[in-house]
Length: 298
Image 1 (cartoon, rainbow, N blue to C red):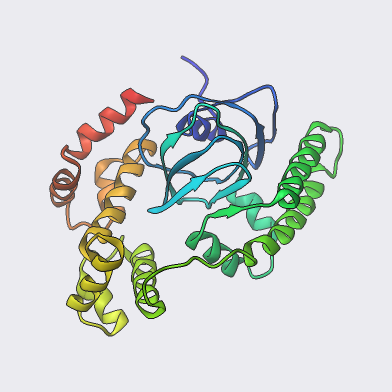
Image 2 (cartoon, rainbow, N blue to C red):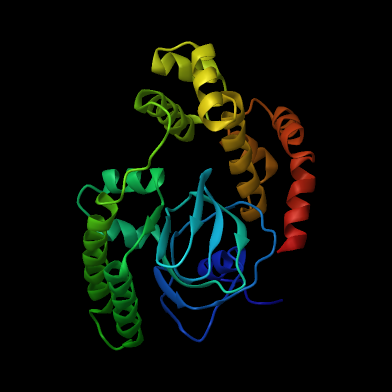
């Protein structure tokens, strides 16, 4: 019987990465992977217990983070917060990048000021385009981390890495707050309404799948919300709610050891049978068959 893969190795497998010689890690808390080979196959949605940051040096890639689409190219930085759901849809053959992974324990110890606001901003826009100055800062941070990690005899190694990482996040905040605002042809009020609806769904879909609940929170009619959401996103409000529920279910079935009953409970279905019908109607197969299919592909 083979050795059980570490949590980091499990995430790397789901990201289709092969660890390279240029790999440094501080146990299960921090890992820097430089220019790993990337074997892209059609993968299932994945919920990572780590924060995963990807800095693209060459090539391009696209996908979704918690249903927010992204397309990264040279100089792009993508941040996926812990327990957010990743979906990769395409990766170019010439893609080259640096991957930074941090555990929730490590992130908690950073004690970054305005952490909630920072996470909210990343949740809403996980993609950052850096200029050369920003790219140089990322490369310098990764170089210093790799060198610190290699000095295993240093009793202050973890503390030094925490301080260095905190400084990195504080510096990166400048680039995040000075991003160009997104442009839209729709009125700001309509866009704000839709963004508010999607934020509420992202926060509450596990407990509430009925549109009336969100309409009540927003003091608007379900019909009005549906009209605005459909016009601006090409999906109905109900489709957005269902997509969040199904995406979470797919990620849990593919990557967790929870039973189907436990997954059903986590999404607040009345019973496993109802969950199974809901899932099959959207995905085209039962949760059991979906789980079996994902295991065969990994």
